[in-house]
Length: 465
Image (cartoon, rainbow, N blue to C red; front, side):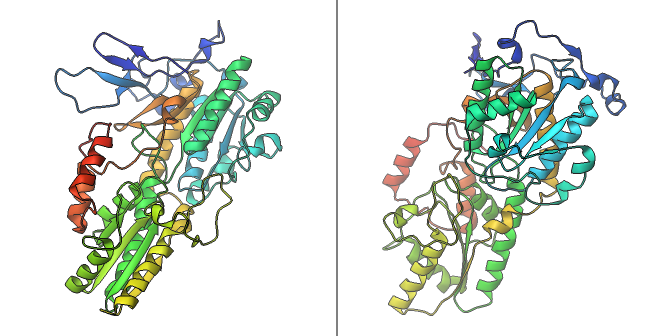
């Protein structure tokens, strides 16, 4: 683990490892970008070695300066000669929009910015390292892949064997490894870095955060999130049309969010057609005064229809020990969750059938695989481009054992150990969740005692969006 640097002013630099930390007397080379005509117009293209990005930008005047990260970008000196670079790219875990864009921009960045002509695609996730499934990647091969969903390299869950992967890296003469994946993948990437360092290999190991749930800590967002929110709105719009067109119509939409409800929250805020949003971070109860079923009855009486959005991880406490109501399950290393959307839909139908107060017409929509498989939108394409180029700059500058990502809108290099400390969650005591409650006019489903307990559990500072 890389130690952080603390100054008297309370300035803390969470720095990332460098190849020179364990390989002495490494030669350096002038950055090829200085001869690249595309960048000749830039007044100061190279980042200063002392440039840092603050993790917390809202501070009091007498506060310590706090945690900072190394700013991403091209360095004046690089630690790889372009002709010696043999890079590889691997995608792991589930699909999300933007994977092909990142692959394309890593390849094109290496080729066009640094003159690197040997880039290998590892097929099928981590097992591709030792099953010898590879494909050469060139700008021509990847030229149009950003227009497609999925990943041209294929992906898989699990199959991580650190020793065999590093053996393969060493045998192939690979010296830059770009790993696209979510929380678990970044943890395994850290293991690869540690083994590379233990063997004293000149290999830069770089993580690119990929999770549609946006639950990777420290960074503002990960690739595919903007596209997922945009596509989720289409499902919400369909549910709203169905609900509005029927007597006492109810549209239930289940969105991704195993532990974090960011997609559900942002899609709800963007849509404005949602009457109730349920996420893992905000407990709710079904029966009795103030419960969800009572709220549904009231909303149907008020407007004759309603739309409910539920994240896949919400309400799982109701289903523990319950016979799982599932669609086709993924062969994932992650815990398999019962389908809470189907369960909720059935509970609502059973309730109204039992009380016979009013007939309802309920439609359930699960757009999960439609969202995961689409190409990235314009916003994500630009984001993926900047992220990929930042990763390439970091590797060429000799940094390793890091994930690249935006902190307060600026890309920076973040040590693996911080990324792997736990999932990012929606803070239900901050302004963004309050804005959602104001939009949907749903109750918080928390009594004052529960709300106080939740506040006491929140240890991170409130972020005023």
